Length: 503
Image (cartoon, rainbow, N blue to C red; front, side, top):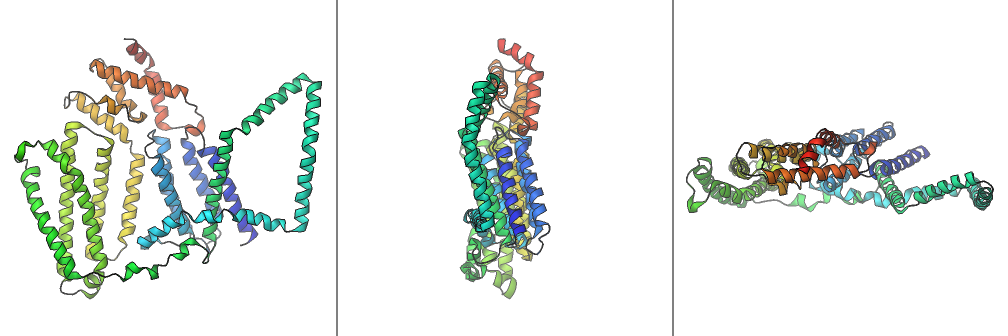
């Protein structure tokens, strides 16, 4: 590897470490997280743009979803995605550096590709020693080594001299002594445990990102991911029996057909329910089971097409058409299961309102429907990588979760139901567990027309949010659009809030 490349990789590691310490390891990071990833994109682009022979620069496109995920800390104050965002970004970074090094192709994504991405997450740990090895190699140069030794010797001799001189000058001049004491406090603060922790974590992050980029610039058998060989994958040799699968599909479809008839009789046609069941209870008890079954159905379709692809799509034997028709029918049934799941959930939340889980389920059903459409096309044509499509849909689903203010939607829906008379009260115990994204909606509950108990609970919640913001340390790195909106809202209603609390 040339000295120029080594210098660029070292520069990337150093910039990553410094920006990670300053922008990520700060109290209440907000816009700084997005700025960190903008810096990452710019630096990576400058490094790889002139290395087309080694690097596939299109891999940098994965910085787009990474940046979108980082926007969650800028547009919302909901921290429920913090851990999953961290894991998602690590996964996306692993994908990006595999793409940069030409070790992954998104349009040919398969199970082994996903395994590669997971294994590659740990690849950089094996490269932590590389920068120190480079330093030792340079130290073997006798002339440079002599210069380094002379510099170290000069520093060692200077330290006691400087300390002695400072002591003497402090005794001679009180103003100098006061200034030195202030400087000494700054030094003590510099070596505070928190700052040492930030330094260690920053170095770790810099080495980790350096290791990823280093792996993209190197080829050879020393990489962990090169142990994985698609050609040796035993799964590729596994074949299925078309008759066995057809019998399995017929059995499953018969049961599903009976179930669908019952769905149309009781759920969709609002017929009288047996055993004194009410519709909300009927909806709640079967919802998650149906969602789970719909996922299993898609998995069964994929398994069947994978194990029987030679018979269905290549040989096209006499059972192939029957298998295809049954898979298409299973797709149709899965659509009905999704519709039933959606309808059941709508019945239930119309009686009890929204929760985070219910919102997540609604969003999931929408994206599962998109995946089901892709599955239907895959059964008929079978000429594209379905896992690549699923990966794109899954990524779009997760990005949506980061951009949608779930807590505000929950508060708005539940409070609207209260004002519209759909429910007698508001579950304030639940609303008060939500993030500050719900504040603009909860602010509506301090009006005089609201029940006294609900109004008092809302005022206590808002006062707590106001106090928390007052005690928080903020600088430009913590800037958050939602926080600023809420702070202005609380300030504009401060007099009103204080009067209500006194009441």
